[in-house]
Image (cartoon, rainbow, N blue to C red; front, side, top):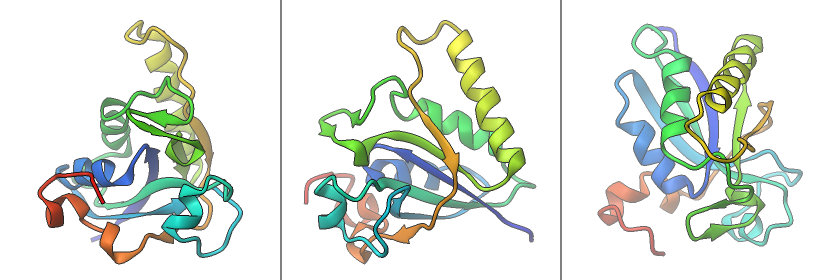
Length: 157
């Protein structure tokens, strides 16, 4: 089996991870940090808002079972891509909406999907989702992995 990776930031990574785990063809989802400047950041570092990292998930998937475009559909549905640096009660650059593409095909697909979403009339405000090349991904601390499974879907630490 050949697998591929996709990296998404859509607010608190706990819910994002749980949503992508439900998708047929997704092999694994890891919560972590990407898009910033610090090497090997901790949750405390990222929550301080000075690392430039976003809370993100790295999705490993089987493209024979789920397309990147299908993963983008999930991404757009599980968060509000029109709110800069905020998702629900979580505020800060670490909660921004972003897609970190791994190759030229992913970049083309996400740019087309963003344009399609903007032109659909479904949203009242412009899409602010950052589109950037995949940067080093730093796996979050173990207690963040599969958080919803371990804590019954609750998001309180």
